[in-house]
Length: 170
Image 1: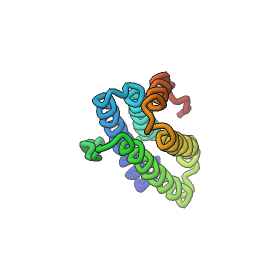
Image 2: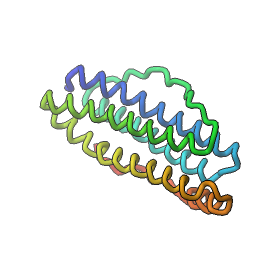
Image 3: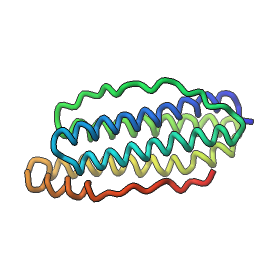
């Protein structure tokens, strides 16, 4: 059985991960409306990944004998007034999620909950990749987004991204 403080934090993380999926679906919707189906594809895949992350936290709680407390998922309310807005908001959101996972990790270490620490190791690595990808996308958009041909090429490249389910063993 997990410490109740860990259970509370993990339950909150389930909600944060599913909110992340909603947020990225909202971004995909925005880019689709702008005619950038590659950017939309990028965020559709991000949404699937975040949903998978939510399920991983869900399953971890169940595997450790705890019921998941599902809460309402907030409606995304990030204003997107320009093509760069979604990219910058995604970066800020990934930092927020990283900080949340780091908090759970710190509490698990403090409580000597090494099983949860081990579970979270994958997420720590994953968040590093998420932040790097978000930052790289911002950099590339800053470099190429002002030129229509380059933006088209970047959009085409993002459209080629394919979904790959996480391989975390619970």
